[in-house]
Amino acid sequence: MSNPIPSPTHAMSARHSDEEIRRRVEACPKLASLHSVNKELNRLARSDMSLTSQIAEIIQRDPSLSQRLLRMVNSVYFGLSARINNIEEAVFFLGLRQIREFSVATPVIEEMEQLQACAPSPTQWKNLWSHSIGTAILTREILSSTQYAVDDDTDYLVGLLHNVGKIVMAYAFPEELNTVANTPVRTPADVCTLERELIGWDHAEIGAYFLECHNLVEELSFSVRYHHDPKNAPCHKTFAAAVQVADYLVRHAKIESGFEKVDPIEPEAWVRLDGWEILYGSDDNEARLARASLANALARLPAMLNGLL
Image 1 (tube, one colour):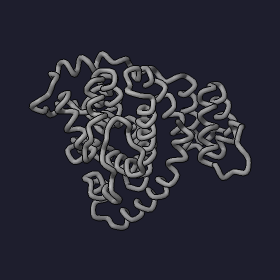
Image 2 (tube, helix red, strand yellow):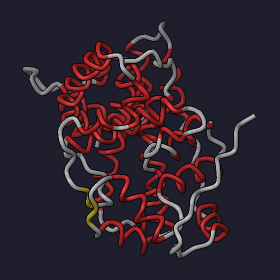
Image 3 (cartoon, one colour):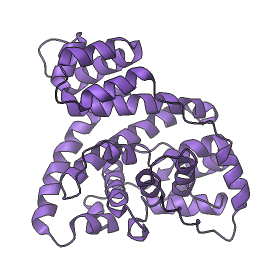
């Protein structure tokens, strides 16, 4: 049985009651089911027996997927002597892991577009998705460098969805989101403080409730709820910790989320986070290996995001 998400804390100047916040979040459009083509793609990408030709055949059924995949592979592998125009070649170069990430991210982005009508600008949405996908990639990279590595796509999804509350805010609290977007703050945690003052809940609380309403697994809802405060997560602490560290790393790479003005993240600021302590503790060797792995991932990140979006 899933543990209920603890009730949010409240700012004294909260504009909306808990009941009003819940009502507005519940009024947001439901998440659509994943398209059948993406379900099949996910199934094949997880199978050790799958052939590149089978995966390519599935992707070719969807022009949007095909276009996005070719754009990504030519962006990531920009050093190739000739441009790749063949889906099967693209699948070969990217490998199953990136195909899995691609097949997870694409439908989520497309499904969330129905909530984007109230967005302040298209650029902000693109920045939000760049940040979200970057956080997903690095969350997976971080967890794979620890004893907490997972076999499914939960690690990627918690990073991808960590800012889903901001998408919900654009639909349910557009005026407040606009104020947040135009108010400079020092740290990501300060964004949450401002949101609680304006609304009563922050984007992490709103996002977690939205995911809970859609009956998604508690690993996702708890990780989203506590990604700015992993030490207080009652469970799934390591997922929340990995998202917190990944969020800082992506911000340091100047891939901002688009809906806020946060001061630049200083080098190595992430090693002072509660999330880093939760993940690596006093194991200097593990932390050193993680730094090297994350440096390589950060170097590849801009090209990958340029292809995906």
